[in-house]
Image (cartoon, rainbow, N blue to C red; front, side, top):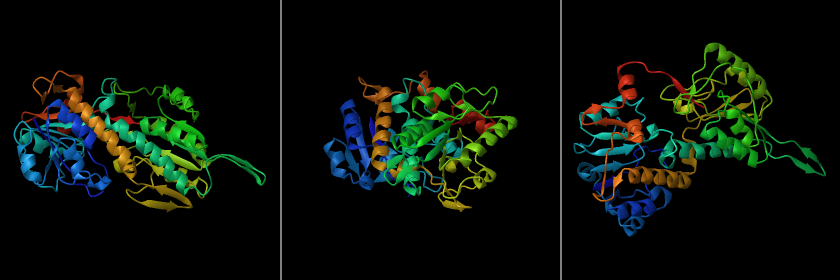
Length: 387
């Protein structure tokens, strides 16, 4: 079975989808692995490293795409990118953002391509090793804190010196998902006083386990979906939450927001009114900016100053640590392929009854087969939010 690994077309992408180590592991499974020339150059990996691992290097992207049985990449074909005709029955694995890329979904379906969306992999125990969202969010949470520490005009830890005592920075993390928990852990390791908030009551113990203090707001019934996402709050609940946020943000030096709406626009949590109540010199990092943003004043890809408060809206923070991010993504990608690999027939098998595949297979045999995506393309679906 011929696997082709494609270079990203996004000029802002810094990660590599597959490293030589995992390419070699795929070769050992019996796959014929072909990588696009220059695949690893962005993180200083030469083509020769892939050849040494047993992969072939392709100088002709279009020919390799047309002949591949399976295509592996980070990004989906952009709407501006010429959609090379993949062979019918080809399996395409990548991020797809299928909620916001209906044209790409339709093009895959029309071409008879079996497309798999990596961000739709269910969050189950068995799927942890292939969960790209969690692995990349982990790194993004770390980067957010390092970014804030670098811009904070003070220091994070408490210091007791002959010249006096420096109090620790106060860091407030909104959302106790993977990114938020890693941000809490990183800020705590740097010596900050850390507060955390999540709408799910069960997250309070996770916050405490990292040495942070949970901000407790009585929102009544909240709960979560079967996939572990927090359900969207009512207007009354949002009002109570914002009142508590106003008080907490006013005494914080750094605020990091991580709340995302799954497949939809992120909720605005830190309003301009809350920002105006913060101390001059405070730092706010909106980790949901590419999904619309949790911070009213944040702008995608920009740093905004508002009354002495710095709001950072840089997307995809994991791209700031491309070597580590590539290592994690490459491992996730290999684990996904290996899970469905038939070692006797030496090929990837689409086991339609597998719960992992049921969660992430978007198109197959000319149809949009994922019920949520199909329903979303036809009409509204239930809102889910991730914090």
